[in-house]
Image 1 (cartoon, one colour):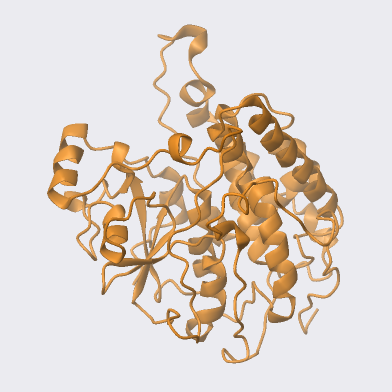
Image 2: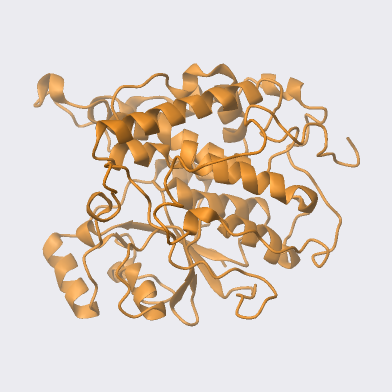
Length: 407
């Protein structure tokens, strides 16, 4: 049974967990042999000052091949973080597909220099494993692991080991390999079009999903400008695409929409404040903004959209230097501003249904999930401008192809 059963309202109102005192964190880390979390701006910057994100450490796929992970109910748990859009993806997908009672989850919180922990849990421990730090699961799986423990991480709770932290493909494994446990017939990853979806997702990663970090973590103007230009050029293409498509691939939500939505949400509500001057806010792209609000109206998306800011206690003691997040953010009527007007329904031939449905058997639904080049051990392969796509992203190559029988 999922621990994440509180209401949408409770999610929206939940306060950001308070970090435990540094002395206490040091004591717990020493007891458990936990290392300080590596720093991206020291370890993942190339000679040009470009942030080249580390490959995911645990990428063993779910599948039928030798050594593959096997889908099993109540064996795995998703560890995710409120402010991490990579990790909002798998819990949204899990909930859309009705897998809450099959794959457990727990939101992490920060423990300072040690990264992710569970400071809002009794004794600071994950209830199902007793871990205090996310990195313990990495050490259990790979003794001496020296990289960053990241969210999302899928943990085998019986073995107390990290088994997959590949956000490039984790939602796809949930969509395909856990199909036999689904309580719904929703299809986010139609088998006939997985090549097109994967290709788009692998373009989306450096240009949109990771672009904020490219700007925020880089150490040179050249690297910053590349990230800035790539991000806003990609948004222009998405804006054009959404002018004639309700969702990225047409009338129905796919895996790609989950990936785009979570990044747009974080950018509009939080990320923008630490990357420098903005060309546009998300809300200044009419089609994208309507699209975001359309998705926000869907319970599973809204549940993992967090307008979490410390309550406004700013008294002017920093004068004009107080940030927007300190002075204003907690007072913004977010949900009112994010209400959809329903206009984007007009772009769909099936406006009353946002999901594609399929009656194929779980066995027929299976396929081998492609490997993402963004997990390559080669720095050259992972250079963020090393991206290609066969169809201009402003064009939906599946226009009119995704259809429900009733539509």
